[in-house]
Length: 147
Image (cartoon, rainbow, N blue to C red; front, side, top):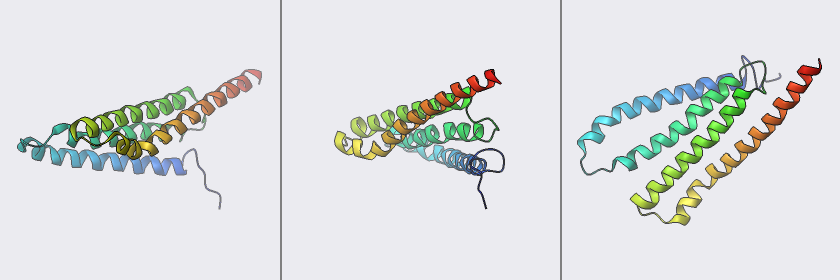
């Protein structure tokens, strides 16, 4: 049995719906948490919002990317744009989360670096994949022009 990675009825289609489900669950949990956050005067809003922003920065661009992977043509400008969006959103959320940990919770920089090391590696990997997709798009465009 051969498993399709891209296109309709593929792994990317299943992952797209799983990411959408996760997004919905996170949004529902965030809405349930808002009254608790408002009632607590001593809680720091930034500390409570930082993980939510990190999840949204990961899942929203990932859903957009997986949605483009369901199409017939894989190497498109839109998929390249979404790869860069995914990397940018995760980079910004990592900076925001690091800022929150260092300046609000007084966590040491080295600890924050090790906590975000896998995210940094993922961002670098996604930028490499975006470059591969960009080259694939160029080659695909050249082939389409020749035919």
